[in-house]
Image (cartoon, rainbow, N blue to C red):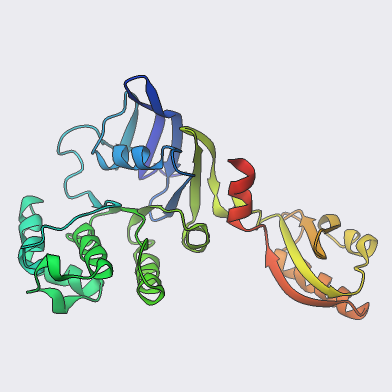
Length: 303
């Protein structure tokens, strides 16, 4: 496997007697969208802040594109950051503010980068508007534009859609999809459905410790199980269990058929088609089919 874009290695962060992050390690592969998950107090924000270089670990090391994140200036032009509670100076016009920030970051054409970034977040009309006159959603997107300036290879987003109306939140998610592959992204969010939809892999934290770090397919079980919501009838569990690649078939509460399989023996799509066909032959009615378990279910079970 190639060298990860971000490496968090045995990182601990203490604030006096309190340990906010306790011996956490995980890697983020280049071009991936990576999720940071956990309840309040799990250590997400502290971990995020150390990845940005805002805080230094008490012990351990964080490398971003080979640079020590705790070294002053090491992440300049490498990382763009959207903090969770980014506050814009209210009296500054948006364009002037972004241009100023771009010049502080050492961008060669800060004004052009500022205009380009506002286009990316669909707010070019705010160029001459004072930041204090922006709605919450607009201010959030302007802050995100700041993170995109200079097209940094790594972009860290803390709660990028929090407080946005559904239409704007959908536009931000679409932008994140566009950035995937071209950039390495880390997204910290309480919106688990959003993270399940966007992320290639994730780290789940609880009480400062790493509970699990894996691909999203591994965590949700999409590579090893699927479920069928039954409406009427009894599924032929023994027949399903005999299908090639099937390792277990059982009926869960609320008339949910769970099928576990060996992905090395059979493609998920192939087995799903066979199971649905078998159910239809036996007169069993169904309303939905989905792979794995919802991310929310997995997180609740782990934290």
